[in-house]
Length: 284
Image (tube, rainbow, N blue to C red; front, side, top):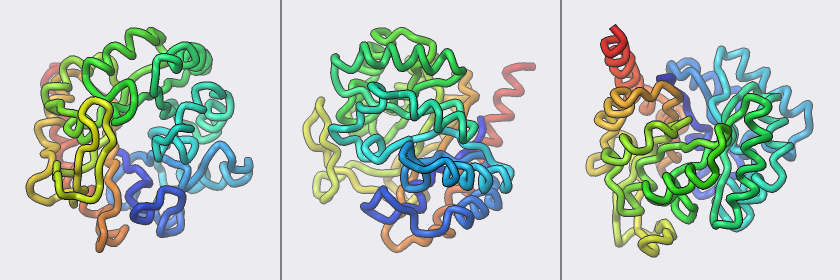
């Protein structure tokens, strides 16, 4: 596995359209902490950015010896609002931006059955350019649950369409994140991790389709009562997953960006290193 950091960790709390530090500083901190890649969102670069801005972002990434693990090419995809499915109906600019940034993975969202045909067409265009569309296991989408995700992959049925495994959303939608790995593993192109716990009293709720509003509370990566990443990473490695593991953690109130990045590296670098040793043993 390769360890990536989502730029979400530097976004202002409750604001997904900007980051709290200059991007060059964020990339420098990520590289210094030992991350190999950055997952880029519209808070840094989007399909609406002029070419010179895209080139500047890629120059920063390359200067720090990083790669772009995945692209979330507009704000609706990050927010998952009613406009999030526009990308699959006009995928060209997202493919262009991914190529300009040197990434192979592009985040998309499917909300309903009427998104399946556009997703097939978009996935065919992506595959023709060596790119892959990634649908996250996410509330409000066709992939809230394991069964829903498997049905969606089967319905789209294109090599250019795969899944991003994200345990927090699965937990909120009533799934066992650890048990979900085995059936989803053959279809994964990316892995996200964010830490939360279920909390009916929280002011934050995921508006799931399968369970209605589910109260959640985002917590620090080392906080008790959250989602233990250690068995998830080990099971992913045992299932043969060898792609990006992206820390997709929001910035918690009271955290600094530098402190949050350092905490993410401390938590996940040993897990990825252990997963690599497990893979080597499996191959020997």
